Structures are given as C-alpha cells and as structure tokens.
Image (cartoon, rainbow, N blue to C red; front, side):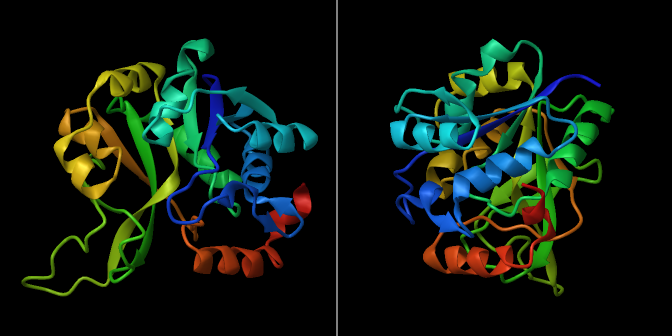
Length: 246
C-alpha cells in the first residue's frame, strides 16, 4: 500500500475554546491523545503535529511525538498542512484534526484504504458519520451523490425538510485525506465565496471543482469545539477502550 502520513494541524488560538490543544483529559493534553491515537493506525507510517506554537512543540516532545514548526499566517488547518506537504513526496496525507481526543485509529485506517482503492481518483476524501438531523451549527453537514462525491458542506440543516421528514444526516468528521497535489492546488486558491460565509474551508475545494468524496464510517466521533464538548470528552475518556493502549 502507498505510504500515508498523518499531519495534525494545531494552534493555541482556537476561536471558541482558546488553548484547547493543551487542555487536560485523563492526564494528557488533547493534542497528545489525538497524536497517540494516530500512531496506533496501521496504515500510517509517521505522525506529525504541525504548529506554530513552541509550547505545543515542547509538550509533544515530552511525549515522543514528532512535530513540524510552521508559520502562523494560515486561515485554517488545511492551509497549515499544505505549507509543509511537499516534504512528503507522493505520500497520501491524512489531516487528523487536533481537537478530537477520542478519534478512532480505525477511522484513519479506513479512509486511507478507501482513498487508495477508489475508482474515482479522489483528490480529497472526508470521513462522515450519521447523526440526528437537528445537531446544531457547530458541526458541518455533508451532502453526497450516489457515487459519494461531495456536493455540499454546510453548518445549516441540510437537506431542507420541505416535502418529507429527514431524521439522520451525514456529519463531517475530523479525518480527511489528501493527495499532495490536492493540498498544493488548494493552497494556491483564494478563499471562496461560500467558504467566507460558512467558515468551512473545504467549500473552497468544492467551489473550484476539485474531486472531493465522502467516506462513511461506523461509530461515533466528536470534536472539542466548546466547553461542553470538553466536559463530554473528559467523561467519555474514562471508559474508552483505546485509552488503555497508550
């Protein structure tokens, strides 16, 4: 199988929960949990935390986690990992967003396998799970075609329940795979119209006709976006079976 590398874009100046990367969950910072779980994925050859924060770099070094120092000029995590993607040759690059301390290694393995085996030559693949329709605007909803090509991403409740009821929708999860060429192409595109409205960075790729596909996953997943998510993560970690592996 082609080599796949996990890159975890992280910063301290998060918008809704400042400093969340280093918040403690069961004795470890959130970003350390994310990195350790990425290291458990069988289809990942190396894991790097990518950040402009010396404090995050020092913490990761204390836990034997590789880091890459980036600039601090980026609008989002995709731009951050794109800035250093060329050093990994033609490897598949998996963006494991640093605010998901309970991410399942199986999610990472599954998206690598699906991306590399796809008949549609995806440039980008987004992991998704099913969630209740009324799940709020802190999550991004995904509308895909029958071939799983992503048609729309939105914080709004889509599809609109005009003629019939919808109880379950697809949620954008925090594991995304990119070809290196896709990251370079993305980084050269200006912020797009819908991206500027919704603050969903991969709308830039969709608006520019890049080949973006979804990869449905089994199980649950959530990111730490607000304080309630942080409290939820602390409780969930106490009984999480993967926690025992690192």
